[in-house]
Image 1 (cartoon, one colour):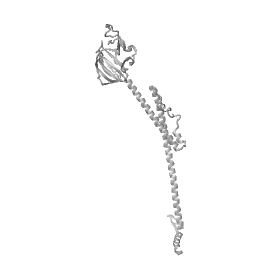
Image 2 (cartoon, helix red, strand yellow):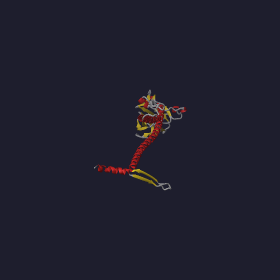
Image 3 (cartoon, rainbow, N blue to C red):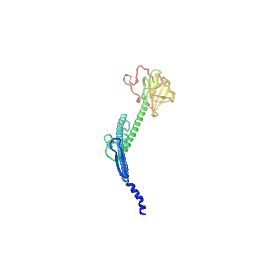
Image 4 (cartoon, rainbow, N blue to C red):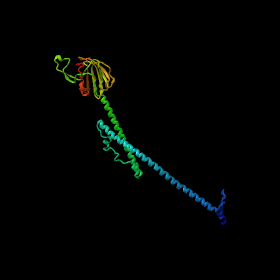
Length: 335
């Protein structure tokens, strides 16, 4: 019974103890090389070779992953450094925009010329001199979490500053456009050429002086010249009335917005109708003597908030011998 049980083990031991011969025959004149070993030793070497190969593969794989990760980190660090430099340039551009914004507001004498970001927060954010450079931050050896927080803060700061600059420049653009519109709507252009024959204010009535009338209030400015002299709109606006009015004759009224309107009376013919949009300097009528008039002239009024005001407060006074538009050779008329 014992021999039968040990028979398989004996066979295995016998197989392992058999010798194997490895013969290498070179193609040259060298002698053949022969190597003999037992089957057990061959299997042991095969197992050892497999373990060494697998182990070396695992170790090599880890090292390859390490070197790949290290190379990726270097590439990422280079990219982040370049991005930091670009963000520094963006910060510099925003600082320049802030400086330009202040200069523009100063030149335009805008109300609240203080930096809107500073006005809202009490500080204007870090300047080029006192802010932390992202390039130095990346090279400072601090942890990734700290760098990430600094990145987020810097990006948020850039976004806030960019939005603030955009809002400020939009406000400046609105202000410039509004000022341009206001300038174009301000009746500062002379309505026609000629001689000033009557100013704004109280005067003796030219129509009833012989009747002993003491005086009357003249709500506009009279400018005399030859009949059919061109009459111009003194500012941009919309024609509110064009037609006949008692005392004014053929009359044109233009609404310029901002509570300002102008009136052009005694014209011989109007070239615009109600609802027309007119531009500053556009010809709107011809000078005449219609209505309550003693000669060819233009009666010009400026109304502000529903009340007549002195047109001379808007008109630019001419210099030289033709001061205030006086021309001795021009005909004079009174209304």
